[in-house]
Image (cartoon, rainbow, N blue to C red):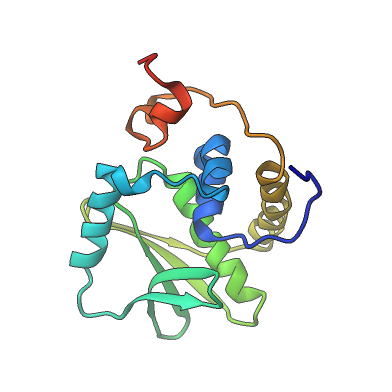
Length: 172
């Protein structure tokens, strides 16, 4: 495989996986996708489809980012629906990526993480420091993706991951 860093499309999912697991990021980016089999992913899709029925959902911008829904007011709100707060940091950075992407195109917005099963939401107001960190992350993602597959690091959250068998086989 050619290890040169070349332009790649960075998506919100890739930013999310960057924080969850570098191995998962690499596998997903190489089209090894096992999420279709995951009960957690199916539950997330059900929540996404059944909640917030009065708003237009799944707004695709430039075939790069997919925003769950928008609300217009004094300032544009970018909403992202999540099942639980278990991976809150990854959720936050995924949403910050959407805000960064829009900011780079002249659109200012705030983000809202929606946790409908918890009946909670969190407002994310991006800072310049957040955007600088996002640029660093966006430089790091291609290095991971175009490098060798990172060795999996076993953590508690791995057991529910759709890549668990791929990474750890029968070692349960």
